[in-house]
Amino acid sequence: MSLERSEEMFNKAKSLLPGGVSSPVRAIKPYPFYTESASGSIIRDVDGNEYIDYCMGYGPNIFGHGDPDIKRAIIDQLDKGWLYGTPIENEYKLATRISDLYPSIDMLRFVSTGTEATMSALRAARGFTGKDKFIKIEGGFHGAHDAVLVQAGSGATTHGKPDSLGVPESFTRHTLQVPYNDIESLVSRIESNKDEVAALIMEPVMGNIGPILPDEGYLEEVRKVTEENDILLIFDEVITGFRLAMGGAQEFYGVTPDMTTLGKIVGGGLPIGVFGGKREIMEKVSPSGGIYQAGTFSGSPAVVTAGLAVIDKLESENVHENLNTLGDEVRVRLAEIVQDLNLNYSVSGIASMFKIFFSERPSNYQDIQKCDKQGYVEFFKRMLNDGIFLPPAQFETNFLSTCHTREEIETTIQAYESNLK
Ligand SMILES: *Cc1c(COP(=O)(O)O)cnc(C)c1O
Image 1: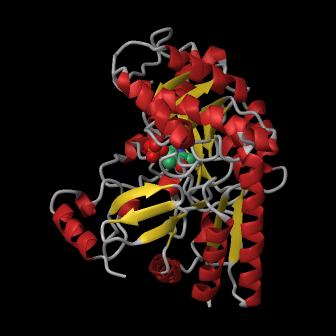
Image 2: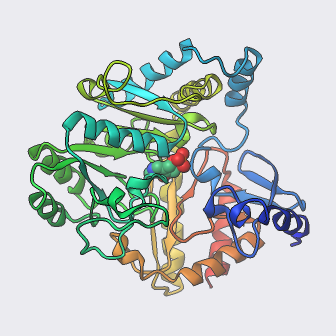
């Protein structure tokens, strides 16, 4: 497999873009392939190689690349112009659909990224409650803004240490952390910060270190404890929204948060974020209230139009049932391979997300530290060489789309088997 032109392009990019890329995860070593085009489940690089894609833009492309219905909707909008700085009807229509599907969302605001959505949701939660502190889950990813750039490393730290240079410690002083799947830690963290915690923000299914699933009853307990202590529960459903079910993880698990953030799928592949929740909270967002939030590109015409097209298509084609069944099959097959090869690995996932951890089954951020990350990198390279593009990091999940055929899945499973061997 030649990657000559990709290498050339990367060498040029390196002197202009930090690490040669526009987002860190794309910096595959020694250099990433450069994409020429993509359609359906296939992504093609500039050297003429083709890959079956399980990265799918890191989640948004549930209908694969270049879906004709979404494309048509976007083009129809582009014909009418693509940035007005005024409201449009589709904005209101998409809001209606989202609010109907997510009972936790009475009102919402469109923004341009998931990062912006969680940043704004936290501001709204703090503004509404008048409290400064919030709790996040160790290893939970909520985008790249200051307050949430606290991972963990040490589960014992009460006050978050920033994970990035350039984030003053004073900015993360109010960011508390607890391990996933651990109610006792949550309860004790709340006790020691009595009446000071505005919100708990969490991915209901940990998508950015995994996927790692909630233990039986965990989300229900989280809901109960936060409610009893007057703490807003924010589900960051940027990955799980429209992925697990139309109504996201909250529908799938039957647990209703106070606020929700969405992104990825709901923009049909165009940049989007959504934050919303109870009416009394969201009415405090500007201009109806004093919690400031604004954006030139928020509710951008082509984006909300693509979002409507995605929801229509998801509803009309029974997508989740089929995809989730396919996901189950893939996970069973992979688990068999792992078992047959006597590997100390675990297959994880839910709905149309799957991943092999190069470790025993983890249930939180501490556990995943035991993964053989170097082993995964080697595995990733071999899979790529066999024409299969998985997310390059051990902790990014694989996504199925409606475009993946039986034949492609079969090819993929065989490649898993030979490369794991
Ligand atoms: C991707 C992601 C974000 C950030 O969204 P961007 O659009 O990349 O800013 C936030 N939360 C979760 C759970 C995500 O997976």
